[in-house]
Length: 209
Ligand SMILES: N[C@@H](CCC(=O)N[C@@H](CS)C(=O)NCC(=O)O)C(=O)O
Image 1 (tube, helix red, strand yellow):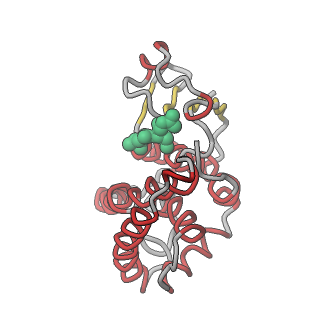
Image 2 (tube, helix red, strand yellow):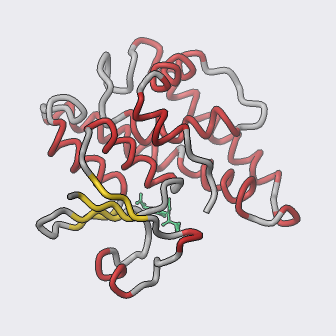
């Protein structure tokens, strides 16, 4: 059975769990990292030299870390032609949005999580939150324009392209201070909220350690 190492509320674990839920893959998730520790465990470091989460291990010993490649791998293995587009161009388009989301949206999540949930109150930095929110709002301007004439990031069909951006967007909707309106992003978010796997793996977890 597929093993997934990582605490359920890690933003990168969330991506993989949502993907696993969409694909209905039988799995065992092991709480790891954050308050559970284990990142520096020598056996874990042999699986993932970075000590980060998530890491997956298949029955045949195939091991993979880095959440983006994990989502791509599982989508191609279990959802080719659906979650993973089966044309070269379609797949590249989906991967573009996955990488774009990790590079451009993930920074706000890190700043919000530390300054809203993890740091002691006296160390929390509201200026850092405001700066990260302003930068993310510019990125949501880009996403809003892209979503003006399509239901999902790659067109009419939900694909792996939606997973990194969609998982971070729940946190954006819930946590961003004075969040500017992005009607197309909000409509897309409503479509994601209708998906049981999104509700189970993305909406039900509280950020933190
Ligand atoms: N680029 C990596 C980042 C992995 C990462 O930094 N994960 C966080 C959790 S979301 C982590 O391992 N934090 C340390 C911890 O939770 O103990 C990925 O996408 O998998």
